[in-house]
Image 1: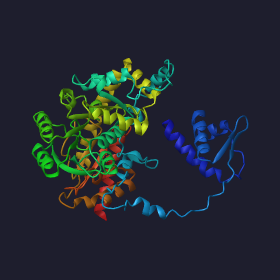
Image 2 (image 1 turned 30 degrees about the vertical axis):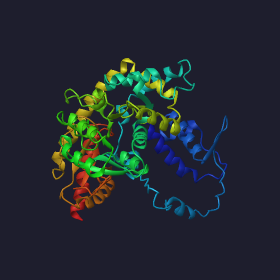
Image 3 (image 1 turned 45 degrees about the horizontal axis):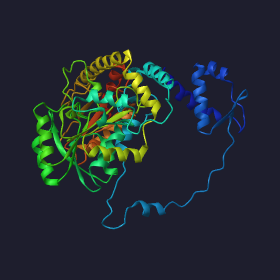
Image 4 (image 1 turned 30 degrees about the horizontal axis):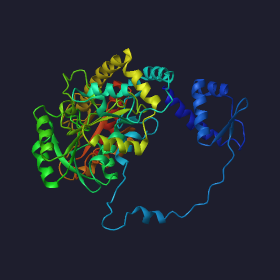
Length: 483
């Protein structure tokens, strides 16, 4: 059993057991808990610390842990006034904003114990370089000035590393270090378009970007895709029809479809944006999640963009750990100053210890080994999941087998307009069968053409869990047919 699972299970057991103690009553010793629950002393220590953080127990050095005294609940107040304040009803000049994180929380919220996480958005712990990260963080902490204030743009060495990774058209002076990719996307959207403006997006696309756009007051406008990425003729039509000045794209292993923008379309997309006087926000989130059978990767769109059409977003988070929130924004021209100003106002800077740890990690011999291991394992898992689905659930359609990323995008049976109504039933039935899947609806900013689900193979422990999860999905579909 993994340490984090052991801690969660022990916390659950101790919460129930606390009801047997009076306030101030002493809990069993750590040694007794180790023997009783057959866990390590570290697990007991972490569980007690979590209960203390929740206010359920208090700890006294040398004496042990005790059930906390009951705190008086505050009297309920009247918050109804907030409905008026948050409604934005301040006249026609006010741009309505919606802050809906539900599409993002599907991949962030941990399901109940025992549920297989096909809805995950990050690498499973077994794929994360935890030892290398721990060693990098320890080395970073010993660097001179590791806890001092960093430059607001980021450490020069880290900016140089990202610039080299992006391509020859980008220098360290064009790079800002950001707190992960999501923050970088939000900063770019705020910098490039005023509230109320349209922003062109691929359809389907990443729900976190749609949520960030809407929270900023922007109006996402969908541009359909096919197996070769966004359709240029429809992109040109959308620019003409809306007057948009921003297009957001994931040209490599797009989320959720896994599609890669075809070589012939790459210069065409940039030419269309330049003709419209528009920026292209390139979300290059999955470059380091390439599978080992993909072949050579295309360079980022920003790699050969001397005119500053592309604002590039990338991150180390996806291929390392959800908590290594270190990414980069790259841009050329006056827009860089606006991006810099927004980032400084929002967060000042990314914590220096994280930047130092990132530098230690990417400069260590283990970095290349980690990338190669992830590449090989993701390719195996993708093949395993696709084969299991073909055998157990042939009614699901896999339009595209990706060569990178960590998930498969599947169309539900009975495709066609309105079929998305089947998604809630499928998602609910799957959860009853103890497997969590991501519904397709949040990936569309307009009416979806069919019902979909997204299944992650990166967020589970391996082939055996993939096979068991697909078997449970079969059970879920059978229960719907019987009903």
